[in-house]
Length: 186
Image (cartoon, rainbow, N blue to C red):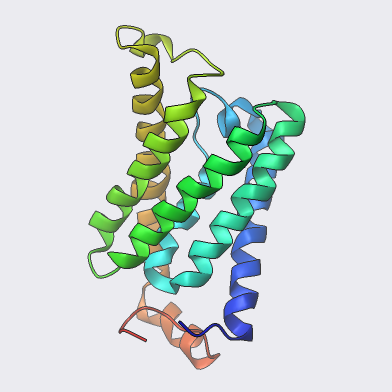
């Protein structure tokens, strides 16, 4: 794996985008939708772009998640568990999307699962599961809740964004400016 200055810049861009989208979401609709028991982190749609831009997105959404979780914990304390495990979930999710980049819809669906299982696997320590899932054990209700929201963010919103950005009229200018895009192995 060769990382050049463009890759570092793209990584920083995705980290910043992840943080900005989460901060805007926190202050516009409330922090519980970013770090609560029913999450819909719109910024997670960026995970799907690992199928187009590769490692810079994998590292960018991981670093962005660290920063977002630190900021979120100032308002809605979940502690070091969230600051460590949330980014690990993003790294695994984006890594899977990157590995499965040729089958993009499958990649986005599979990429949503680690976020659901890892984040849902620890959030039940801090919150009760949504009432509609009260018939399940608490830990399982939380995993189901977070997995559904991750599927919406990554496999629906993220995949749609991926389709839009994968158009030839978008890819052409990106490649002409020297960005590496996954239209073929590099």
